[in-house]
Image (cartoon, rainbow, N blue to C red; front, top):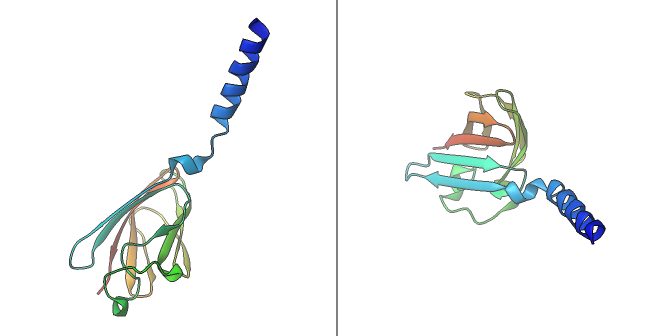
Length: 121
């Protein structure tokens, strides 16, 4: 009886180690009425940006592919690679990049996570 129990325990351990990182994907965004947003991304799932990147499109995101954001990679104390709309940018803490009318700043870069702030007219 010990062999089956040991085999089940081994299979459970292997399954626990191979759980995809997608299970750790988290995303949150809050915006004020002046189009300033705070965004936190963990994992590499494609997310909907909280506002359209182009100011001419208003304040409600309609789910357009062009208004999506994805964290490609990030390393604590290092760089984050982010795909925002049609722009792929690399930034360290404090650096900014622009997509359409929106300026996005990397406030905190961690292991597979990033905290961003954005502003647009």
